[in-house]
Image 1 (cartoon, rainbow, N blue to C red):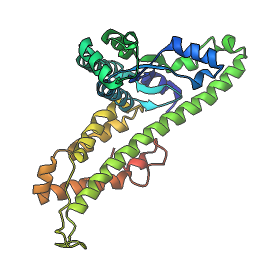
Image 2: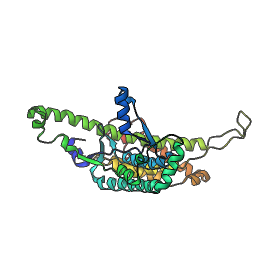
Image 3: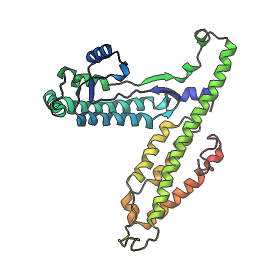
Image 4: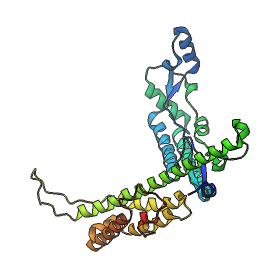
Amino acid sequence: MNIAELDKRALLVSLTIPTVQSVSTVRDTTRRVVAEENASRAAVRVVAAKLPTARAAAVQSRLDAVRSLHTALTLPFIGQFRLLRAETYLDYLSKVQSALIIAGDEVSAQFGDRGEVLAAVAKQMGDIPYDVGQIPTEQQLMKRIMVTPMFLPITSMFGAGMTDKLGISEEELALMNTVQTQLVDKVAADSTMAVVAEVVAAVTRVVESLVKYDMDKPEFNEEGKRTRRSGFHATMITNLTDLADRLPALDLTTEQRLTTLAIPLRIMARFDTDTLKDSETARSTILKEAMELLGDLGGHVAEDFGSDEMFGGLL
């Protein structure tokens, strides 16, 4: 992969997910205490009131879902920025905004009734004095959680005009771009390999679960209790479908290797866990497919992503 290809296929995106704290701080009182006690600002925090813990946690869980979605649709890059395949920009934006709307609905559900919220705070605070005015309203919380992703074309890191901004010569800029291009290529390759490793882990779990399920077990364990038969978790299958859905969005290569890799994963997820439990033929079929896929990927995860040998000709 070179920078020209990455230029056409990638954007940088940053999304800062807020935290809905259950504690409000009285800034004026804090500053006064700092001044009177000649203390460090970092060491003094005067708490005015707490948001109802359960209500704040419900909103935060929705925001955590936004963070998870952002992470699932992008690849690690540098600092706060992550790599996003340019073709999936609108899909990413639509999904993140939909998740934020759900978080907003949770804010309304938890904090829309001001009277109930204040009653919950009063019960939670007990005899501790607090200022009702310091408790965020529904509107204030809504403004806080409605964040917007920041997008940055990757070419801006290498664009014209940098010589003047940095006070360097064209030759120095060319050398800098060469070094940075190599670093970008490495980050893109490492990120892609991390995705392949995730696929390997998911398929390995399938193999281990299927093998364990059909292993002979004694009727009773060492403690004399009847041995329970191994089962399957639904996530064993949903992990495969989730990966199959994500891989095209994460594919930064012109060869579309990750996109193609989604095909055997989706096929492998065609049976639900109940079918696998009831059908030895289904278990045998999926185990064979999983073993073949691991045979093509296993032992090559740390190799150069660009080599055809890594996929053993499967793709």
